[in-house]
Image (tube, rainbow, N blue to C red):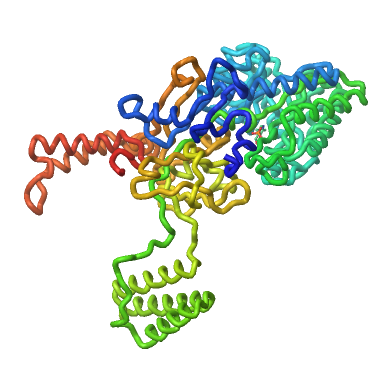
Length: 628
Ligand code: PLP
């Protein structure tokens, strides 16, 4: 397991067990009498055709991990607050954009209701889902309303207050203020207003483009002062209660964090001085996770602090500034998304075959007949270099020979068998002198665009590991190539700066005659929400797995098959039911060529209809029952 740095990025939730499989410790510690969950057993159980029969790719969610992440975040702040004598409390919110799955949101609201954990929304559908979920939550939990707002969005947030939900409208644009003043008067609601400040502190990593003076969001000092003046003029300065900022995701160090929080705390104190009834400092997201297990903070893939150190740095910075200015300590709110949901979801997919980028044609032997003088000359040079063991010249003559033959093929003077003969010869020479690329291409039953969009879009790396055979040394190295007809649909960069992954060898029957399962870890935040339907590969199947007393130590509490071909077609305005009828009728019409319908016999008709129906209802991925 050290090959894949599992202890680095996986602890305390994931490890390799004595059977060589990935085991999951969903509560983060040993909770005897419960046993750790063997991920392979989960996959076998939910894909068993005589049981749930789910198709891969598959997302396995562990709500217990989610609960543990929330509790750890809360206790890190509780501890920092207590140990530093801070005079208020921590009350976080989950930004729903990280993963809007209904059951994740419902779990977070339920698990966090004991400590007033709330939600953050950034659009109208998000505020609708947040409001309805928080109806079952703690009444003090915040519903922080961020994002660009129109009057409909603001009305929804004001309506939330009428429903006794603790909504806070955070101004991201100065223009939003007039709408808030106007609508709150019309709706007769006293709003709670926050403002998002553009800080000068800048996070220089990929995720830092939201921060700094030229960042996309928030109000400048000039705008903040105008907002304060206007609120004061309309007698609503008491409504301004929260200051929000967001330095950017994956904040690399506590030094940068402390710097940003201290700047914001100064602004907070200034707002108090100007007469706002400030109560909350909302430090945004940015609590990072360690994707590569290095804990170095040297790239966007890791952070150099723990949850406890993060909380301690925030509390210390706010406390220091407020004490200096004799300002009452505010409630500290954070909007951590990545750090809450990343760990609890694992994406499981299968490698279906592995091969060299260039296959060696074996059945077209190189014969000298039929080639031009020049080609024969190149061949003799290559032969001579090979006999002398001159590797460099071999590579040179291979290139020369291939190039000349391709030209000959394009001109029409060489046939396909002759070209294949030269290709085979060259591959053979390259192998014989030890210059062939040892990296294999593993074809995986997955779409990178649907399931790992951040790899394609922003080069984000996630730990990818076989979920079994970890007790056997992998003898090959590979890159992963997905099912889409797109050259970007491949994964050729891995954590640790590797351009290939150690993998177990596969033959035509899979891996040692069986299937080969891989897992992508830490992808619970952003990936599902961002994933598209390129090539009409839809979302994976999803199961929820709880630790339990059962025979395998787990229970599957929800299982949903991924989007079918009909589902993804519908998403692009096609009408699968009509398509089905059209194809079925077409099959029943007499054909011109033999004047026979392909489904004219009673039995044929049934076969055609059932094949079509199956294809509409199945997931678009390779169906492994038939392909193996
Ligand atoms: N809050 C705001 C305003 C954001 O823009 C983001 C994400 O970029 C978050 C919270 C969540 O950040 P993270 O996932 O880094 O915790």
